[in-house]
Length: 193
Image (cartoon, rainbow, N blue to C red; front, top):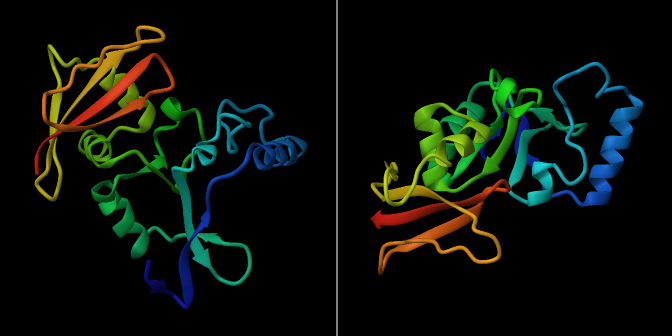
């Protein structure tokens, strides 16, 4: 990320261990962050996006504590173009009713290119996307999405059937399969490049 306003833009948060999450939670509980609020500002241990290794916070390194990116310049570019690289704004303002998390305009999560593009097109957050994609089946209504680079994907959902689940995919196609941490799997099949 390029320089801006005599400060370096940087990723200043990355994967956190369970011990780090517990420490952050304890600190915030002592500051009453969770008190009298239906929204949280900090995730509890074992529920944090940072423990997945797929979430980053972007900010300005001014030499002191990192500051959030201003809502212009590099920030706007990344928010607008992040989907092309598989990133979404994780806790967008106005989506608190779905995420149950305070809005955070500098936290991004990698979800994969076809998923990020669909979320961008539909203007939905990750929680809304999981609900949406759970309605898509291979047999009845997979959705196709075309990326900026022209690659076309078919996206659908398969419910878990316990210890072994049969997942239909077209023969001789590249695909990804991701668990949704709920009740099944999200499949993205590359149809054409």
